[in-house]
Image (cartoon, rainbow over all chains, first blue to last red; front, side, top):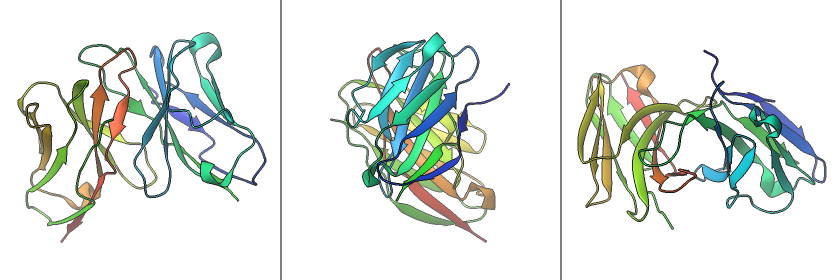
Length: 116
Length: 111
């Protein structure tokens, strides 16, 4: 069974440009999460999809970030326009269920974004 | 909010035992996860505790005390490949079940 995949693995863009990150969750996982780790800090939650619906986007830094999950399969995270502080590693994770007891979240390898 | 505290770095010897501690805030607690992450790779699941006590899985064990807001990961018979970052993460109760991470403990296993 394929794990969570992310594309690209690395992206270097200039300040003001646009970048779109993609995540393909494990097949059958309704829950999809985006997290981010900036240099020297902990991994932080950005948002959560259940199928195609945004369940919680409380971690999104600002309106320069737009996440979509059309059709409830893969998801994209677009940063427009990118700023220097957006540099970091963006992780995607998926899981089967939420609620009491939770469910293991399977992480992708991340996309390393560098904004120059 | 939730604060997850764990040591930044630890060093241990091959074949030895090491314990990595983690403390968390207890409001909205819905479980405690440990992940292993090698540099440049995805965090991989090690353990999940939601009830008090010790969960053993091969060379790795994880302990939870909900009343103390405390967990530890115990690694036995250390191998060189165990050198990695170990992430403590608290699941927050709710429809999202999002994870709140600590900064991770970088473990270096020496010969």
